[in-house]
Image (cartoon, rainbow, N blue to C red; front, side):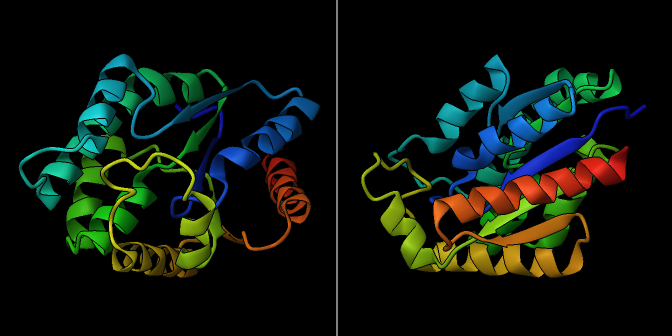
Amino acid sequence: MKQGKFITLEGVDGVGKSTVVPNIEQVLQSHSIPYFVTREPGGTPLAEGIRKLLLSEWEENVTAEAELFLMFAARAQHVTEVIKPRIEVGTWVICERFTDASFAYQGGGRNLTLSLVAHLAEAVHAEYWPDLTVYLDLDVGTALQRRAHRTQDRIEKETIDFFENARTTYLKLAETESRIVKIDASVPLTELTRTVSMVVQNFVSQSS
């Protein structure tokens, strides 16, 4: 039975997901809410191992289906070992990326049907969808510039069209899912962090 809440952060690479996590933590700390921070793909030893497989370069082409199934293999382990047990005892979970990323990247970016992603999600975490998803929206060109200084993994090396399609899917999800709050990530950092804190503060107030 769910006792804690599940908050996820979404957006294409370079929007600032990791940057705003401390602001979410500060809000929860101010309310003495126990929480745990994690990420996807990853979050457990097995899931982190799958993450390395997913993001590594291979001589062969990694099919869209193989990528999706590996994502959900890692997610299944993550939900069972980390997310579900913590939420059940009242701990709030903050996760960088979750199934919305699969809709965006493997659905939109890889052109797989969203119904396939939804089917896997139902099998892996039917009762554990996020309660709040903070979606940081930014035009792809700016996002890619922000992360240009970093070493790029296999997925980060994808084409601009790939990320444009992922962003388009994120935007469609934000229009249809009430749990998703879209935030403009093009604003100065101080404004961005203030907005994220406000969104989480409002969510905490509504949840009490």
